[in-house]
Image (cartoon, rainbow, N blue to C red; front, top):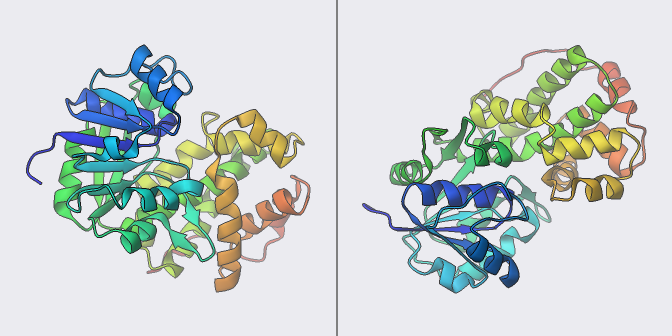
Length: 336
């Protein structure tokens, strides 16, 4: 794929919108798929996605539509930025429209269950296209405000890496590459769990030292799970791992952090979700990872504690007791 003209972004939410605007601002024609025809009409007439980024003036190179066939027509790179719960349905729907030479990039930070599958695995099973994973510390509001940010595009295909960089790179948005697609994808999904933990810990006013403890134990659990799944734990030291973990676990711009904070104040899960108002992927990921880690006998005490708080009505304070009473006392254990 020597030259690129049209880019498709599937998902008109917070992150999909800023992705579309990054590509369009670089001169590419961008089709933005949204599920609602009224939303598409508003975006096209107002030049903004007021549901998510009312302050962001969108490039004139963006055309929103609820017609998937129309959006995918002649698209050479397709970014999928939908919630994980509908991800597989979207992949099924696009299979009849897409060019087999198009690149497909998963931008959703989630995992599917029954059975356990990564989102890139869903694409590779159902489609023959070359695929990549985009993940990093990408709080959409800051990207919309042109604040400095970076991300990682992971793929074994060098041409795909180059193409994605050309589409999304800007003076405010730096893109790094990786061959470890599985590690980058896992890091993006797993850190959402620990953002919930950190948000809850912050609401309990545990202190900065305790947050540092939680962050490092989170990284230990993430890398432990990664090794069991065949990923390179060194990937977790980079932007898609530690970078995303710190940004998400320390910011009230993170939906998962907000959710955890709300739970820490005594809200039920439903109340916390309603107050956040947008999808927090970490709740769904928590249940999937807890079940998979139990099946594989992977020690993830923070995951277990958070699961008990959300699904078994344990008190938020119990996570600190569980952390201190856990017999595991080895600090760094990166092995590959």
